[in-house]
Each structure stands twice: as structure tokens, then as C-alpha cells.
Length: 106
Image (cartoon, rainbow, N blue to C red; front, side, top):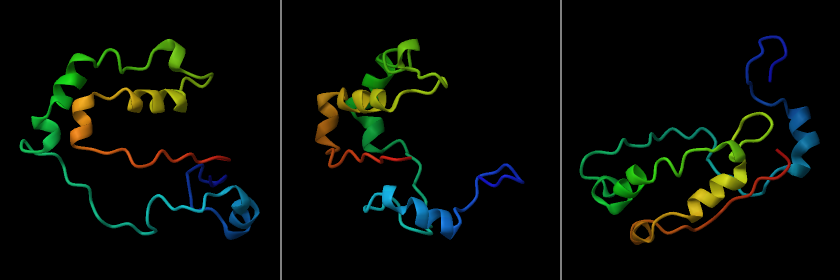
């Protein structure tokens, strides 16, 4: 964060070098990624699948509860993983979970 403008900014090289031991080897997004993610249309698998109905009927269940929050009122990252692992079995016909990436030292 830039102290003068109080905005998020690119990390200076000297700071990056100092913290590099805590970085993951695997890069999640390419540098200067320019592709846009397309919006879902009415024919997308998500819209026509049981997943949409599942999310609509269980939306109260998937909302953060008081016990899911940390002291800063953020949802604990473990809860996100729990929600992902509780997806409906019909969803697995469309999407295969390949990785759960753990970024430590952030």
C-alpha cells in the first residue's frame, strides 16, 4: 500500500526480494492477463443444471453466519473451503476440482 496516497500499489522490488521466501512457486494468474471472463448466458451449463436450483434453495445455508466471521468480520478462509467441498454431487458432472491452492505468508 502506498503510504502517501493510501491506495494499493505495485510492490517495490526491494520489498519483493525481502518477502520472496514466503511466495508460492506456482503463479495463479499470468502477469498482464488481458482476457476477459465471459458473462453467463441462458444456455450456460450453470443455468441449465441442478446447481442453479441447489444454490437458490440452499442460499441461506451458504450465507456467512456469525460463527464464520473472524475478529475483522471477514469470512474465515476455512469456511470457503468447507462450502466448496459441500457442493452438490450433480455439479461434479460439469466441473472437476483439480486443486486447492494454499497461499501461506500473506
